Image (cartoon, rainbow, N blue to C red; front, side, top):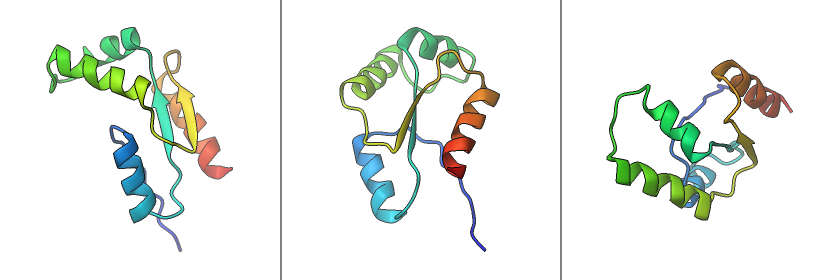
Length: 92
């Protein structure tokens, strides 16, 4: 019997490498979002980063994306649609 686990994290090339080493065979799915949509979504949550930190994090993701197994652009997807896409990848 196996255990299925989802880890939601800010995925960088470094964290991606860590997951590959520590969780061999894991499926890494990188959800991407444009900056305007990222700002809109962030406004609905508790703020942990300064505006400059938020922009820098987003720009770093675009400039140096992690090597993921799959990448999904989620600007137009609600949570349920995002979940279904990831489930299909996981089952495949």
